[in-house]
Each structure stands twice: as structure tokens, then as C-alpha cells.
Image (cartoon, rainbow, N blue to C red; front, side, top):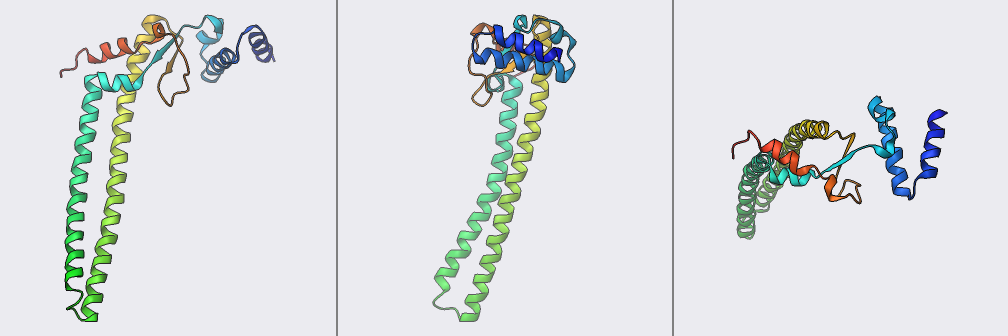
Length: 195
């Protein structure tokens, strides 16, 4: 129960609930991952950095290439969908134009053909959307691994014990601008990348 007492001591001396949550989170990370360097330091003195993944994506050559590759992949898939849509519209207008002159049997046959084409189109759209999502996940995961390696290197050189993500869905509500290491990460990632 030494940990419990330490948490109580830290919480009692902290001013503000946000600071307490950060301290508790840092201690949890240290315990969960077995980081002796984090747990051996006073959590209040833990050097922290912040990184903006969206900015890194937009301002690095690798991030721009990822965006271009994903956009090209999506455009190819969109072209396939548009061809299918065009064929469906043509079939629908033929059906509408011929509906008054076709026998009931021929009309039913054309309608069934249209329904089958529509079902095939919907399946193709679902498959293409799944393909795009998988490609996006694959590219983002590879990029994230590269960013994590560089962030780890930059954090190590700066002596940081914790780096938080900053962004709309990150949970980071406030940070001092001097804690942001995004520019260093961008610089390192762009070294050796040719535009």
C-alpha cells in the first residue's frame, strides 16, 4: 500500500484536479510499463513534451506523400464507382423509356436485371469503402510507427519522460507552447526526405 500512500501524498499537495490526474496518469504509466526511470523520479519533476500528429502529417514530406497516396487510391476507387453509377443510370433510363412498349414479362425481366445490377453496385461500393479504410489504416499505422520512433529519439535527446499528443481528440486540454516538440520531430523526419 506504499503506492496508495504516495498517491494520497501527491494528491494532497497538488493544487487542482487536472494536475492530480496528470500525476496519477504518469504514475500509472510508470507502474504499468515498468519504467523505473519514471517511478524513481518525483512525478512533479517529470519532464513532459507535447506533439501534434496532424501538424506532423501536414508538414513532413512523408506525411504529404501518405496523403497523396491515399488520395490517389481513393480517386481510383471513386472512378470505378462512377462507372458503375453511369451504367445503372443508363439501365434505369432504358427501363423508364421502354416501360410503356414492353410486355409485362419483358418489363419484369428488365426490372430484375436492374435490381441485380443495383445489388452488385451496392456490394462493390461496400467492398471499395472497406478497401479504402484498410489502405488508410495501413498507411497511417506505418506513418505512426515512423513518427513514434522519431518522437522517442527527440524525447531521449531532450531528456523527456513523457510525451503527450495534442489535437482535437487527444484529451490534452492545455500545454505551454515551449513543451511542443513537433517542430523538432518535423525537422528530423524531413532530414533525408527528398520532396
